[in-house]
Image 1: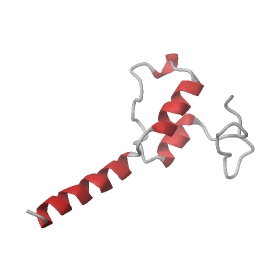
Image 2: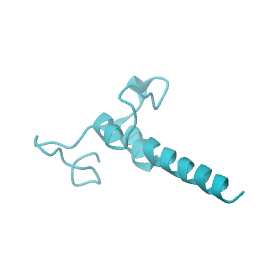
Image 3: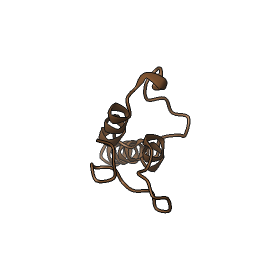
Image 4: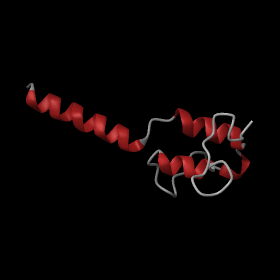
Length: 75
């Protein structure tokens, strides 16, 4: 259920699906970000779903900056 044809993206150069960590990097998560306390015990399907459903950190920052700007402008 984790192949390219099952909702996963293909690697741009290699003949394989991207890894969960690569997907997290695309989502702007820091390379050492821990999604679960012990990542060794988490299934690839669970990790992929968790990352895919997450709000990317950079998007959260941009939204927060926009809200702060709006509040300052409309006091």
